[in-house]
Image (tube, rainbow, N blue to C red; front, side):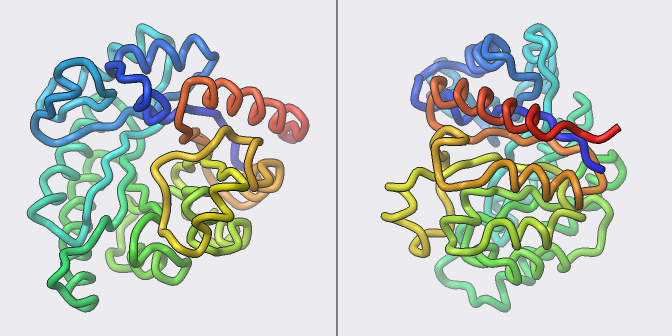
Length: 282
């Protein structure tokens, strides 16, 4: 039976125009025990200037580890999204993210197939996705890092599509990072989809969707960057917890994806209450 931990994705700080270290400290002050940083390739003006929360993979990855250690936070994964179907964009980025994760003891790197090139066919896209994913799996397998595939774009917007990507490469390094909010906005039964992928789950993005957001976009989009506070939207978190505990063979971090520090604090309060109400069996 899976043990569930609660973490916070760094996206909560995006609207605050603050640097990575501020996001780490805020997460710790709220009472989170796990944190999910976002990394990027190359150099990016806003983060270098201290107005954005991502960390460059050109930096020493110990910058990430030491900031989290000082705040008393464990790192659940690195958010390293990019288009798997575009090897020239995501190939080296994903491999470097895996190597950085291994160096500082991070168990999971999360990604998705991203937005496709406009001139490729579906058949060509899956060849390209397989190439990028296989190259990344070679790097991940040697280092004991898991690659978490997320439902987030044109092919992974439904259960069969996510499974098709998952089965392209046969590797123990590849698993699923299930995003509850994306799955809901795609128009699917979140709980049935989670039941289906739970045995392969390596990480979970805990994203709730407000009623107004659901009414405006459900069935029209493949996902969204952040959701509302967990417990203030359409999702049944007690049911999600039950599925993961029953069907996932490993411990899982629920990494909250929301838009503001206030939402992050309320999410932690709600998810903690849900876990207390359904204690793990001895």
